[in-house]
Length: 208
Ligand SMILES: [Zn+2]
Image (tube, rainbow, N blue to C red; front, top):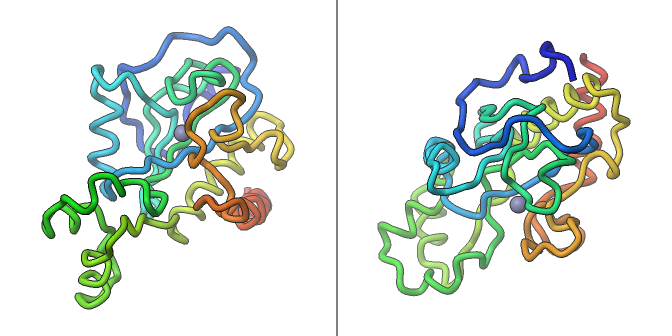
């Protein structure tokens, strides 16, 4: 990869210390993740910037379509132990329903509220989610899907990849992974809308 394609031109650069310089393999595909935590992209980036977390994707996509790049594409980020050498990692701030069920029943109203994406919701809708007996999760938003698709389209074009599921994969598809909800298709009970995503990447590609 030449220097000119090391960074996405429309992502904000927020360098993380969590990476290895260079790679042992050619970059072959994009690995899609979901953060499975709280809704703030700022707090997600803080975690990926913390050298004690030992985790970092190359790119994070927020719920309003914010796009941050943390690691250069020709360096090895730490997002998927089986695929770190071969892939570029993209995180989405979203959460599988039920992910926090073990702690959910013990959380205060205030703590539950901090785990809900309240943007665009009425007070009644927020109150319903807070009162939920199980973790309601956070679906991928339309703005987030579109921003991620724009990035993926740019990546496919820049690296000469076809837009297909060989080049755009979910973390859950990595052999031996325990992250079985991460990047899992809605059709398979996950929260990532793969068919909408591929369609959106093709639309974004046509604009480049
Ligand atoms: Zn993951």
